[in-house]
Amino acid sequence: MFLRCPGSVQFAQTIIEKRDNKAAAEGTAAHQVREWCLELGFEPEEFLGQIVKADKFEFEVTEEMVDFLRPGIEWVQERPGRLINEYQVDLSRWMKDQFGTLDVGVIGRDLIIINDLKYGMGVEVDPVRHEPTMAYALGLWDNVARHETDAT
Image (cartoon, rainbow, N blue to C red):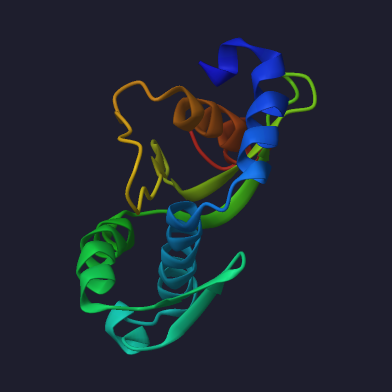
């Protein structure tokens, strides 16, 4: 598990840099569309047929992508609280020199919600007790939310 082995982060980065990961880039493109929708109020259908660049790849926004993104966008929009989108959380208080980029956080009066988009093919991710997501929640609470919420 990456969080349990400090050297694994640097090692993993060398592997990632050595390969062209089209699936990861496609996920980045999907994240971009979702961010535009959540931050700027667009509907995902407004991007149908448009090209989104991610890394050195280009992806067309398809019906399949829109159909995948829509339920998650709507779910986030229905949550009460302040939206935090693509926020870099500082985790160095617990893991020296570590940080991560949180996809979406919603800071409510009594609850902090973390929503992490997984798009593309390849590695299945179990959302139950997912350590990186839990670390992002802790980082968001420490960096921002503890000053705005009663959630602990």
